[in-house]
Amino acid sequence: MAVDMQMNILIVDDYKTMLRIIRNLLKQLGFNNVDEATDGSMALQKLRDKDYGLVISDWNMEPMTGIQLLREVRADAKLKALPFIMITAESKTENVIAAKEAGVNNYIVKPFNAATLKTKLASVIGNF
Amino acid sequence: MSGAVPAELVAKLSSLKTKIPTYSRDEIEEVVSEMLSTMEGDLSEMNLKLYAEVESLARYIVNAKSEIAALRPDEIMSEHLPSATDELDAIVGSTEEATNGILQAMESLEALVGEMSPEIGEKVTEAVTQVYESCNFQDITGQRITKVVKALKHIESKVDALVGAFGEDIAKYKAAHPKAETAKKEQDPMSDSALLNGPQLPDNASKQDDIDALLASFD
Image: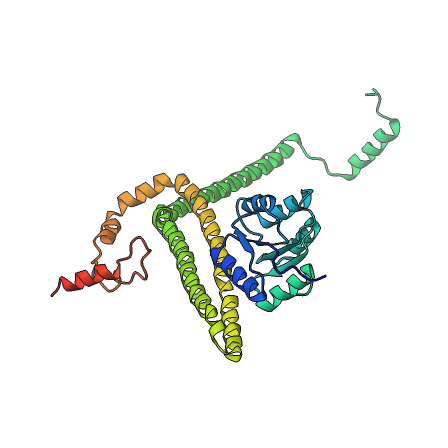
């Protein structure tokens, strides 16, 4: 099935520069409908207000972290199937296991490059 | 207790008496007394040793308190730690500002790709992508610095407890060493060491206009 390049993507990070970098890289890949949130609670509100095809979220944010957002998403009847990629500097095995157990679809470790982002996106939403 | 000693035992004791030399009561008393006096001597020595150890420990604690007071943990609390955290916050702020500037420039360049030949456009896009990737550093360094700031805050709370515990000794030290206090205040602001301050925090820094105005005031 072809990937919907018009899908809404929500990117979540407390560093504005990181949001800008991810947005620009997504734009290069052909995804232009990108919204931003700076923590999990803001993201959750946006996810409940609009239809999204993918979430790309940082882990370490306040007040709601990325893993908490992921758990909220998986516990929500309407959102539970939403593809979710964690993009974070938290690279300990325990973090990856916790994210996997919470239902993450893929995991990108910062600092990352454009090729990794593209590969991980393709593995979650399909080749584009 | 049963009354009579068994006849067999009495016989054995009588037999022993003949084998062991007998001592008078006075002789035994003398030996016991001598033994006790030796023991008393031992006990006093032990006590003396213990007292000496306690005294040495007390001296050590008093010295340690003076040394800690001389380190002026109150200064670490009031000046050095807040200054260090402010400097680190400033690093995060300035790297963020610089990163945004770089990203802005790259976005402007990328917007021009449509006007370039496909070959050149591709090369430019590739270079711009590499810059985006490199700009990851701001997030990573920011997070590392945040960890350091947290560690400093932890140290700050420990030093605060230390200042609380040694407040009296610190006050005594300050009263006993007024010269050091005055010397610090009276340092020549134009001395080479006083002029080495590094970059100023944004709120304290002079703007180029201020510097120009100051320079102009010499004309």
